[in-house]
Image (cartoon, rainbow, N blue to C red):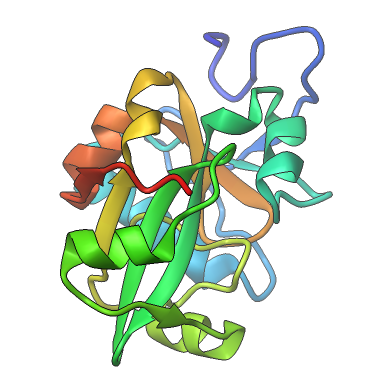
Length: 186
């Protein structure tokens, strides 16, 4: 998927607007998601990860939407599923093709997982559902990384809004988040 900076390779993919490639800062996106996207951009930079954030005006709210926009398989989408463990967020970064088993994820972490409603997700993580990134949270969540993502390269993750994603690898996600790798598939 290599290509000139700011462009995606492949004939069947749309040409999304790159929002800051090659480490050079781009103008902050306008609208309500600007702060959360910039928080992800800053977290990527702090981790030494290139700025690969791409904006898709039609949105990337679901794994299927993101895969269609990016031009990859649904499995290559690193979707963020947020649960509650008391007052703390638990983030499971899973392959877009997998359903997460909450009982298994909770057992791995040694906590009881509960459902997180959209308002609580935004308040706790700083992201709206559909844009929860694996980095740039307001407070560090407990995290698991789906072992199935390790076999995929590249992977794409939400970048702070339902219209932004970033290209990465499972190895980089693991390095940046220090998540525990686990079998979380239902």
